[in-house]
Image 1 (cartoon, rainbow, N blue to C red):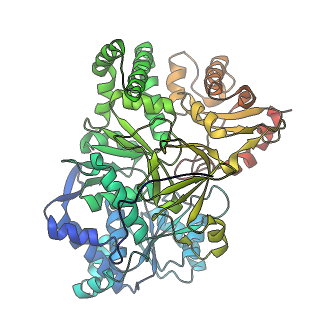
Image 2: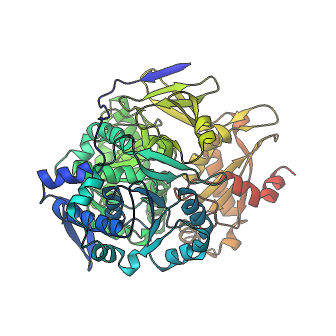
Image 3: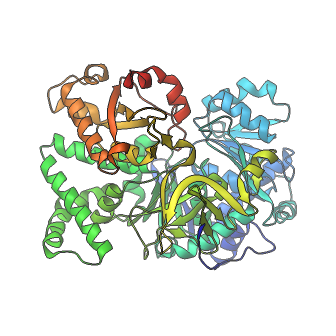
Length: 595
């Protein structure tokens, strides 16, 4: 069994909790800008002193409403300043935060609120309130429902006006590193979501390491980031806590429709995103260039950016590539970086594998993507590429104090201070999550090279075994396919079948632009069997097949007159494919590949 570990650089203290960062900021830098929030079309700065005062005021309201230490309070909202404010207020009151994705259905909301035993819900607005109200009769422990749309922050502030500061301080210090800070429910690719018990110590360990290791992001003058991923996901949550800890200015962008405008105004120095966001940025730029008659220039600029990044990795860039890169920086790369606000140098990618091509492309144009790896159960990252230690195609080395093992069947096992305490009220699932005491089963298959860099090769439960006995990891093919501008989502199939096939959906944003440029109808139903579309998809399949052996290659595919979405139930909130749902809903189409 192969194992790799790095020496610890941080020890979880015996006392303290996540609220200490807010108090420390108040004492050390009360006038430092902690946040910028949108007000009347402008970004209004929020100082450390103001944030502390607002957190205490909301915490008092929770106490006045009867929230006791250890109670669960649910946050059911988009990413916004008030989400962060209430999250810390819940901790100041001694309670536990239960995040719920703002896109969750009434059934999902009912399950999480019932399973967690939440005493209160703070929701976004009308739709979210309605979904909670629809199931409230079944929730005997739920006593309160507030919404940001109805001024929840002001309501709680007024409610708690009579609560003494001393009572909030007494409650604030009750939590220790071993106390549960939050129940983060898994996105539920199979079955009901499970509540992961993440302690204050899990976050403290993770950020005690990450903030130091990522000094280029959290330690530079003028550092800032704009959050647009859902804070219900542990990936965005760990960045939130890291920003508070390091006094990194943070903003929130709740509506993806306004994201580009927000990025241009906020001007972050780093961002975080899932791979699908990077794919969309690249594909949109490619399609726009093609529509403007500059497709060949963009294609050439792409190849040069990739070659430049590959040269950085080798330690030598040819003069010819360097010269072309300088030209394209003025013509192409600078404009793409300007769209991110013009100051963004780093991006953190997680949640799913990012293809090597996109990693090289973005680094080549001047945006270094630091790909990491982790799960909800591991309080986000277990490993990550660092500014001074990048190996494209990997998810970096384990964080200091974290160890990885490759089990005999290829599954990656991890140990470290960020590993969760267990699943809420589910001891059987908790026991099954560990291969041995302290060694968490990731469920992912991978490799660890001699330098400790980890490469994820597939999901253990998703490995396909063809009729010929060939093991195939679908993620390798699916990542390459989604890199094509016309491909939105795809699923590789073939378990127990004579060959590998794929179902593919077309991108609803790129497709109309592509069709208009060729004088074709824009309707999806008119294009799924179009010869030129099929030729494009075949080219994407051919490119994906280059990454695997012949026995693993896609032999047949079918383009669907459908879209897979989070709202439709085929994607998780972090945009991962729910394979079981897709296989159930499109079983006939899968069977047709082999008929």
